[in-house]
Image (tube, rainbow, N blue to C red; front, side, top):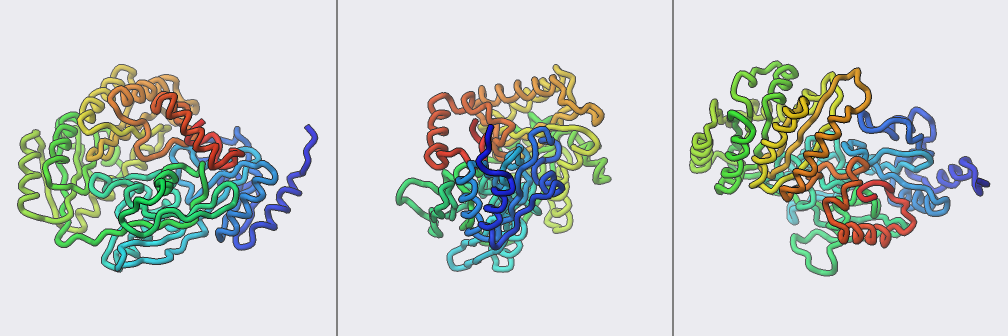
Length: 462
């Protein structure tokens, strides 16, 4: 092969396009930004450059260089993907928007916020609360993930049961396309019916259709009254799921219904120094926005109906913070000291209990340690399979277990990606989940927006 341009010529051109940000080409930075811990290794090679954009013009400049030299662009925000959705590969440009982290506006009058993509989810929520409002989506990565990445993956979280995922809270976007144009789609009105809904097309597109430069999101008023949280314990996850299904449609409108199985509870006890595993085998953490007597009575009634034990309800803010921390610490508690794969399936609510049964049976049949937790209120389940740290290769039996779970999920009418996105880990399943016709349409949409296949290739669809 006779190259038309050397790496240095490409990098010189790139540097000339990035005036407000910074271009990194040192090996240490490229390694740090190219490979997700536990998800990828250096076998795919180093990116050619890592760019921290400081402005929309920088992003347009990077895309200009990418088009000129036919180089793939991997969008990154805070780089918290759990599906290898933002890892670099050999010769690519990694384009980060984490420097673009300004809250442009918080409007009480319109109940919206306008933010750049690098704004951290928790920081936006904190700023909104100073105005008597809050930002509802709360993924487990809330303290450190960026809104841009949340939008790109349609991140969910614990409050999705009441307030929806990121998709349900995005009103408008600005996006730089592969050809360098910046388009404005959607707006700040709560109703929009003009034109095709391109805003929602970009939400969850994982950086394959454009680079998000600005986001307009809904803000909610902080509810009046005392928020109320509680815990309840069940004999197993199936009984817990049955209770959740009835709570979900009871009219109490919970803001959190989180499930933890016995393995997960035991791991949390080790991690936190708590003693929850002394109770039954499945733990439900629940929350409602205010302590209305009728709501609390209904919750207690349904817990009793489904055999819950050791039910505790509290309005104490410290106790509530402790319960929320317990749920957020689930991942480091489970992951500690062992290799792991955490999955992300979402079920129709009526199928959550059968899926819980199936996961338990798979673990016993294949002799695997599986930790099961999830956002039970919206049917989202996260089974985590672990194996010894010294065993560096993923055991074949683990892969077989995941394949069984994926097929069962689809058989029950669910999806194998509820909130973590697709990335490179599941993009072979498009045809299986979507069907041949829809799979083809997905590729046609990609080709329309990105005909040179520059933006995050091999992710989302393959």
